[in-house]
Length: 318
Image 1: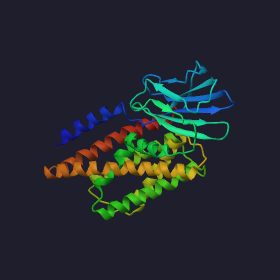
Image 2: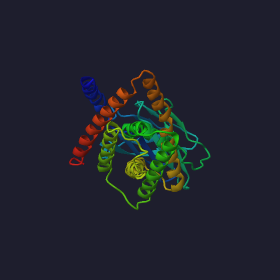
Image 3: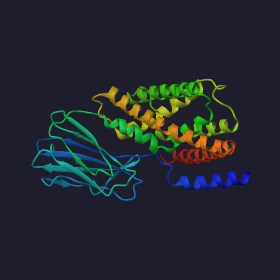
Image 4: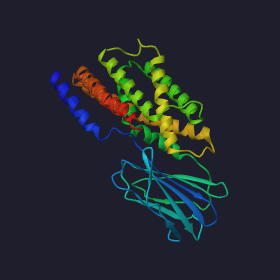
């Protein structure tokens, strides 16, 4: 059994080595500076295998930046766009997209109108409406995809379930965790307190290591004060805030943006619970619950240890 756990631990680390980075959407920001001129800020992830290509309407001519600059996890390209007609009512297209790289589109017009939407690999065409009404509803999907694309947050939720007995304890734990990361997400977004993103990600990995230890120690949250998931939630909230800062938001409706982004995170967390409970139920029926719990704990601990070392080393190269 020990050998099985050891080999499973090694296999899991190797399999996650190429995918330990969080979901990072590309960003396309278009700002109208005159009737016919637009300034395009195109940011695409550095880890994207090949660069996506923007196709503007035929009545537009563009002058591209031949030397993109690095900006955090992105390469940033500034494009000057001249259009004989308004972009309203036209169609944008992004080709050569990775299935894990969606594009967050923000267009700011001279009359202070703001249009925001998503381009995905399944829906590469985006129609800009003729009558623009500001809406940041896309942040709900951004929050949802951020959690599902962040393997560290998934592992945390997965490990947390092993320590919970009973629906009341589950609700109490999720509520404290949610309340905590909502507080730090809001405080970071309004600039009251901010932490370096790389350091935050390293500490998040450390919380998952602790969680794996607790699973092996056979404790449950009925014996652990509520402030432990609350404290972990505060740390994870800084991670969510860092992602929101990198994505960017217009600030036109900060409360709505934070609310929708947070709701998206919660919906993603809730969508994971049935899958986790189904796995636990399946292995319990096969009389392998303890083995499944032990293997999961070693896997969670091994993966998060790798992330902790990786992210700690990144502090010296940031």
